[in-house]
Image (cartoon, rainbow, N blue to C red; front, side, top):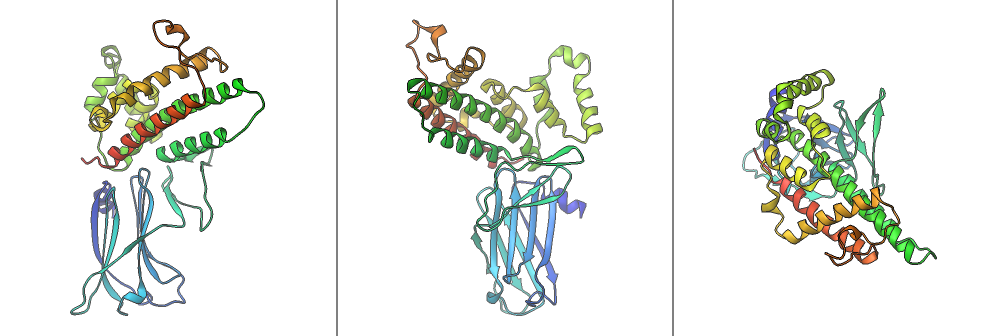
Length: 348
């Protein structure tokens, strides 16, 4: 089983096996778990549910929870069948082959799952939500330790939802209200980008993408830090606290709020080159400007109106308002979407 888990820790793959169950067509048996494996932060579940469907669930931090099913009324009543399921960044599939003569493969249809599955840090399977119930910002602590946080893309989408709610508010404070809302949106976008970058950087290893540790170390550790064995101290900490070495580096050595640092980290560790995946370079320049505006908002005043006043008159003045914040949202959405889509396509 450990060999199977290790082999399945990859962003795409195929599993095939034979399974025999006398109760598979018995409606008095509420649910039958045919196959369930946690591999890294990916979860694979194959079950016969209460509705008499064979359902394959695949869950990963990057792709979320997906489901595909085959209704048992499409399957001849035999106890022994061959099952095949596949997964990649685009789709999941399930195939059933009843082990009787002259019977073809039965192919599944993808469906929208009513629930979400997550793998916690302590190896538990967490089931979230239900039909008609949407859950956001799920955090779980156990024994004083945090075992579940939102994924990178969940955190980013929650940031966008919060901004949408903020923009829908009204006030009689006039122009200054627009300034404050715009400044808070800019600050939230930069923080959201930082959280997304750090979390996604850590997630990729848990999805089976092997980081280039040597290249990353050469990028983030100075000669002096190597002389005092800082990388080895981090590795010892990784072993002691049962935390991934790449996670410690991400927490201690990389400022994901700095676009250039974020870019270099993904490049060195995973070969993800932002310059190749983000085709609109103007968006990158705009994002860097907005990050600088955020520094002015945080370190000068949340009421600041002219965001580049330290560069005027060399530059045209930029005022914080609804138009600017709307443009900022679109810039950050574009950049994160390009990074996330490319990260799902990464392969060893």
